[in-house]
Image (cartoon, rainbow, N blue to C red; front, side, top):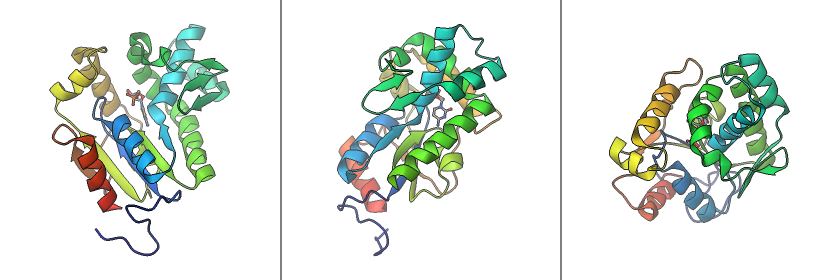
Length: 215
Ligand code: DC
């Protein structure tokens, strides 16, 4: 696809470009979104870290993860900063949110429609404040940013994804993907108009070049 004067070129940093990246756990979203953001000189938002922060707070406060109202209230009041580090209510939880307890709890929290409403509003504000960015998650191209300049859906075989998430374990990973793909609200799906990329077959740099050519 060639670039038009109104659209960013593949080599010129343009803060106004919006790239939505979705895919299951271990599909390579974080690696690719980091590489793209760096190459384009724009910011990146890991929306999974936002849901993980809510799950962390649920565990901290001893709230029942399926108590919809209590978890929604907690999400509304939780101060979350996601960047190079993840900070919630002033506490650095960058490492804690990658632990097995949070991973086992996050899908229940993310299935809560009230929690999603809060997170989607914050994610859109994040993009509005910058005029663009690379945003990764499960519902970015389908719900959060359906008008993104480019939508990507990443895949990789279950074996490749499990190897990338060896600390979580293949079974827990498969369970989380099943919950994320079958929930009633904003399930993981290939967004309309998304380009599907198998990240198991190519090096990151090759994928970056391909994606930049699509802009
Ligand atoms: O990207 P991740 O594996 O860190 O995401 C953690 C969980 O958060 C994932 O299992 C589902 C949920 N999630 C979501 O429901 N919607 C998003 N946009 C991002 C993540």
